[in-house]
Structure formats: C-alpha cells, structure tokens
Image 1 (tube, rainbow, N blue to C red):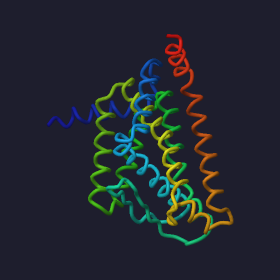
Image 2: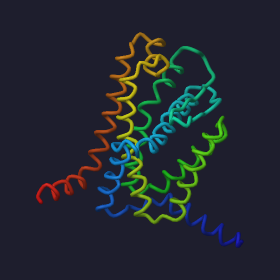
Image 3: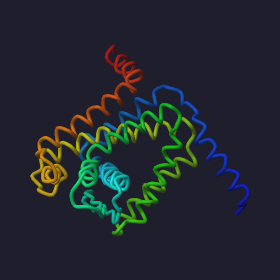
Length: 248
C-alpha cells in the first residue's frame, strides 16, 4: 500500500472538508427530503431506520451530561431499537435535569443543524463530526448489538466522506437531517402515548415541579422551533417543486 499517496489523499479530503464548498441547489434537496419522509412514514422502513433517531437521542443525553459535568459510563442500543445511556453524577440538580431533558429534542436539533450545514457547504465536516461521535460512543458501548450498530454507522459515514462528491455528500447530510427532524416528531408521539413510568418526561416530572405533560409540551415547543427553522431553509427549493407538481 502506498502510504504516502494515502496520506496525500487524506490531507486533500481534510482540506476539502473545511473549505465550505456550496453545493448547487436543485432537485437533490427535494429527493433527499422525500427519502427522509418515506423512511419515517412507511412503517416497515421506519422499523429499521428508527435506530438512527435512537442513537442521536441517547447521544443527546450523553453530550449534555458531559457538558453538565457528569461522567458518561455506558451506551446501549437494544435490538428492539430502544436505547439507554448511563451517566454518573448527582441524582438531582440542574445537571441531571438537563441531561434527562436532552434526549427527545436532540434529533430535531442535530437534524436542523445538519440541514443548515449541508446547504452551506459544510456536509463533509458534519460527516467527520459524526465519525468522531461514533468513535466516542464505541468506547462506551456495552453490548454486541450496540457495537455492530455503531460500526455500520461509522462505515457508512466514512464511505460517504471519502467517496462522495460535494453534491452527494450534501444530499446525504440534508436527507439525514430531514429524517432526524421528522423522526423526532414520531418519537415524541410515541412517548406521549406511552404509559411507561421510566420514560424521560415521567423522570423529569419527579425531578422538577413540572409534570409529565408539561415536559412533553416543552419538547413539542423545542422540536417545533427547529422544525420551523428546517422548513424555512428548505422551502425555497421545496416550494418550487410542490408548485410544479400542483400545476400539473
């Protein structure tokens, strides 16, 4: 293997990742959003794709926990596509509340930022950040299924970063971002319907004076705000395509 050639290619990819090359706006945005919609709405597809929303949800707990001064101990994704993160710290207090509250808004926040980055030409940088997060999660993975899921994510992410051109990377990042925003709503609907006493809104109700329903309302407001931002960014292209189909 020509290591010098590989190093040169790696350097070129890294420089391109921070160059911020704007992709051409066009049909690919509508295609990416359409694929995201299918991945969330079509039940057999969602059964497999929702693991991505679960991973981002749990990493939201982990990242905010670390920022709050807590210690990230373990990360687990189950075959039923549920997950759990364990952080060590005070059992009460603002750090625990913020850590617990971070999960359900996380997919919408990450998704909206991903859409912005894709449209601004920072798609490759998003893929690099995702790779680093996956590597960090691998260190704390505590099951074979979790390791497998993270390795699949990491392999797909790095393949897109290495082989994808500007347009393809932008489409992938935009599509994944839209999927996470839409998936946040489906996940939120599921928790609103659930009577599981271990769900985040119930735990938050015990940690604070705001009951379960109040926390669900907070999640709706946050997810709604980032969904509105996403729509504002995508509408200049999506509106034109919707108008084109409506005129037929």
